[in-house]
Image: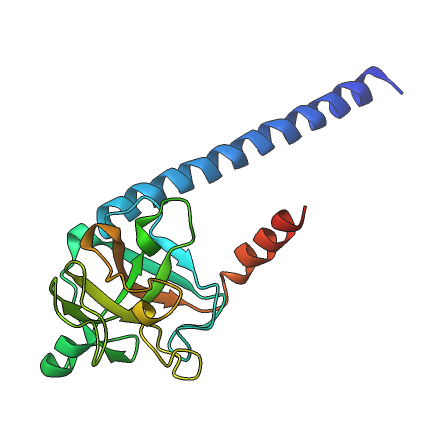
Length: 191
């Protein structure tokens, strides 16, 4: 190998690393821009969640990415209010909210429809127990698997959803793209 071939080979390796560095910086710049725009538009740094269960079918499917607008930028319209106003979100009346079950940090948030609001002492549903405090009664849209309100079952038994537990409201849906996250989540939890 002559000197010119050695120099060309070294330059090729250097160009590969320079190109890789530029690509990496481009990706980082894109992510920073995306996060900044997300904060401006939706009020959250990462305004997306992936639907992990079928509780919101047929309006949201497993693997859908849902864009969420921060709670401090919206007024929640319940299913009850939506019927009176003619307001629909995700093909049914009222808003779909993203909330932390029982207010717990670090657990997977729930994305269900806000059915109505109760005040402290009111019955949470016909014949139900009294609400220990004011909050929302919620339920998934899937009528096959969700025959009762969340507050009647395991998700938030006898606990209306407090305002401070709510992260935001669902705004937009991108079908299937979330399967990528679900795939990797499944792999890493199996390890």
